[in-house]
Each structure stands twice: as C-alpha cells, then as structure tokens.
Length: 357
Image 1 (cartoon, rainbow, N blue to C red):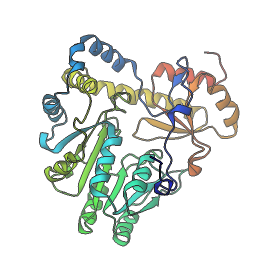
Image 2: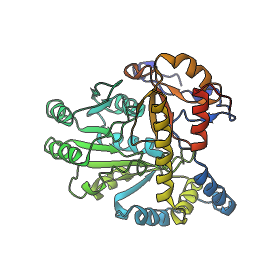
Image 3: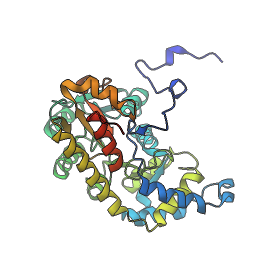
C-alpha cells in the first residue's frame, strides 16, 4: 500500500534514533534529563537478581501493583491508571479529551505536547514564557485570560516546566482550576519531577473534576529506561482513559521492577534529600566561579558560562554529555545539566577550572 503523503502532519517531527550515535559510556551522562544515581542503581541490581525468569513468560498481573502504588502515594486505587511512561499518559489524555478540539499549551515546554496537539487537536495555541534568559516566568492571570478568550477543551501545564524549570504555586493552580471549570476546560498538570520537586496538586482532584495529573518514574526514581508512568484523576475520567489504553498498561518486566521497588525498604526520602544537597553543592560552586545559574525544583539546572563559554564547553564535551540549548531560541547560550552525583560534580568543576580529572 502506498503511503498518502497528503495525510502527513505539517511541521511534525520526531526523534529518529537510527540516526543518533550512541553515547560514549566512558563519559558522564547528564544530557537527557535522566537521573543516574548509584544508591538507586544498587537497588536495581538487587532486584534483577531476585527476578524469576519464568515471570517474563506470562502476561502481566497488575492488580497487586495497583494496590501497592495506591498505598505508596496514598490515593484511591480506582483513580489511578498505569501507563507506558508519562508520554503514553499524555497521549491517552489527548486521545480522550482533545480529539478535534482546541488545545492550549505553554512554550517552550516538553516537545510531546506540541506533537500530540498537531496529531489530535482541531486547533492549538501556545502561550509564551517571558524573560527566559533572566528569570523565566508566566503569569497565571495571563493563562486565565487566554482560556477565557480561546476556550480550549484542554490546557496542559508541566509543573515544574521543562526546559524553563519554572513552576506555579498551589494557590495559583487552584485559581486556574476554578476558572477553567467555568470554561469547561480540562487541565492536565504534568508532575514528572515529583517527588524530587515536592509540588503536587493531588489533593485538588477531589475538588475539581476537570483536573488530570500525570507522573513518571523516569526522573526522581531514575527509571527512564523502564518506561513507567501513571495518571491520577476522578473515577469518571479514569474509566474513559481505560478505554484508550493498551491491553496491558505496562509490560511484565516493568511491572516486576515496579513491584519490587514499591515493596522495598529503600529509604527514598533520604535519597531525595541527598540528591537535593548534592545539587546545592554544584550550584554554590558554580556561582562561586562567577557564573549565572537558573535553578529549578526539577532534576536539572541551566548555567550561563558567559564570555568563557566556548572554551569551557569545548573542555566539558571531552568528558561530559550535557545539552546546549540552541534548539530553544530564547534559551540559546545556556547549558543544561541534569542532576548526577557529587563525585561527578567535582569532576565537572575541575574541568571548568581547567584541571585534569
């Protein structure tokens, strides 16, 4: 069958992994917003040793996983839906609520929001963050006014946002939800960085039937390769989302890993505290060297190396995989570093100081 090119979506681009070179394993990987953290990696090693290979030969049994997750996050079991990463969660929300409808998204933001808007929506609009090179911000009243005038069926707000690192407070989101409800607009809050970022709107779901929250195990849990996410919402919406899921929300290997993590006695609270302390160590030392840092509650920071940028980046690239933000015009000139260990931060600082590591 010949492909009908007239049905292709204008301006839609996706990563082509076949054309990407593999990352050098001898380098430090902090370029793709993952969280590769040894204490948690040690837990994975223990889990892998415990896996019964026979479990991989049968279809997933997810009932117990749902019970464990419900208990872990203290949320009603019937208001949770597991997904194949938060990308899949977002897709399901779009497929359910935004099909041939108006959608409002922020800009810049996680790329999949624009991708799904182009695939599913009738019409979508971007609302832009301001002052991105200095102190990125977006006024909640501007969002509310745009919803009043544009009348979208769905508004998507990562909180905190990537790549800006900006976030909205609880009171601001509550105000947004009150207004959106009057406009019959659903609000998707993307909490991909929870609980590394402690901001959550989970308690508002009981009050607002237009609120959907998506989360990921890729960031704080360091499980980007497993592809695990979930949706939180009211019973009615979760039932609608269930109609659009795959036969099994997640595969057996993913479900086994998640089961063992949820059952483990790993001190996750102190794990997060340690990550935040190490992050502060890097930020403090970067500032001591006279460079500007854009911090965020997420698992990344932006650094402006100023007039020394070219030389520092050239040296860093020999040992470090990190991201330069040329693709975001408004963030051009900044370098994004995902979080890693303190020992890696010390190596990064030595490179910046032009010392051998």
